[in-house]
Image (tube, rainbow, N blue to C red):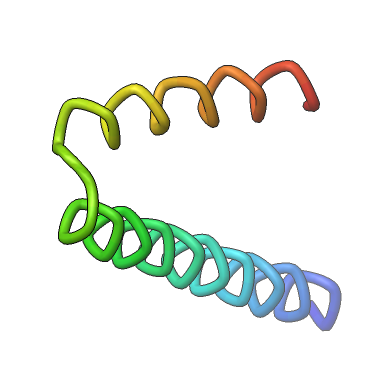
Length: 56
């Protein structure tokens, strides 16, 4: 029972953390779009996504 509660708590914490990371990434790309062309930002997104996949 106690283990189940702790597991649920950790799952919630992980979900919140991933949401925060995604929000920060969206905001970062939005800020980049203000300064650069949209097409270049899209290329950077794809490149970073590939690098993330290779690392994990």
